[in-house]
Length: 317
Image (tube, rainbow, N blue to C red; front, top):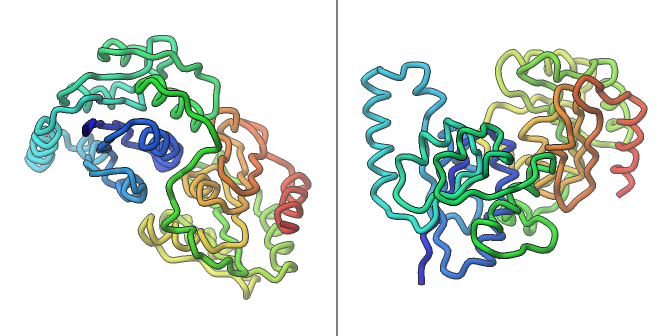
């Protein structure tokens, strides 16, 4: 018998990546699961990668809130609401527990599950669920999501996280290049350029090409300036998230700031080193089947020496 399930987890990139193992668990433990997923339009590719996801329902809340009462926003929200209300779900599972996700949940038909008052990041969200679950807050995000899904559907999960990204990894030959993410939207996430140059030098000594990712024109210009003395380096052009995943999957190694793309690399099983300076890896460590190192913490960026030490470990694999 089909069990219709709606997952509400709209953003951000890294958070959607962290959700994927919970989807694998649901597909494994819930017979007849038909899983739909509400995701922000900019990230809708990520749920579509998982073979257990039946339909991705895109929303554009980030764009709508900039012009909430414009004719276009009103029309698009009407279509979104009609889409949500067209299906009666057996379970509507809010994996965000934010008031913005409640705006979605309240437009659905079905039994609403979510975190209880003490577990939710925004406790008021818990008032809108029919069934509330306790999941301790200070745990890795992947673990929290797996625990919440298990509580909602009454099973116990086991084993390492399965991100369901085999479409990128199966039969993929590893190539001699490193993926590097040295840029961020916030200056407090950055790592000193001199330290990056030490990393570039070691990767070059290992015979690897350098492929840098950038999220916008400003980041691309910064990355281009950083590699001007490295003939083995290039800044990759802007591409879809699927294109980025296809670039990461064959990489020998990835090293980057704490970003969604660095977490995607770990999920793809690549040796991945994450540099944290504006967030804590206690809640969002790198998780994957390959070598990972989550270095630094909020306000305490990792030293050049520790990053190079972990890089040396990864290169020996």
